[in-house]
Length: 120
Image 1 (tube, rainbow, N blue to C red):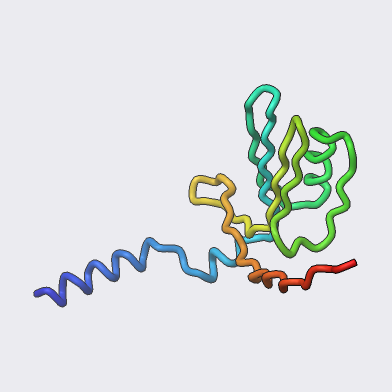
Image 2 (image 1 turned 90 degrees about the horizontal axis):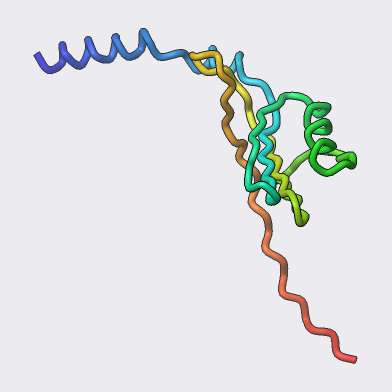
């Protein structure tokens, strides 16, 4: 009886869960941007898929251009009025049609080797 119940539950779960192939087809590479405004204590979150959108958002807050190369690790830029955080993510659509994301796993950074002090 327990086996029959487990079999029925597993069939039910597998029939309504999306396959990994289907979710991987819908995922695209993109960027997660978090901008915090210190002047009026507000923040904005963006999920974008193109570099042009990232440049447009950066120009809106910092009035300068951002040369965006390959992002190996998340980038954090801050000045007196704004802080800007950008990370590379996988963007996919939720069942509701909203865009969500998954962070990529970045390689671990090597700790700096201890340097010998310079004597003059």
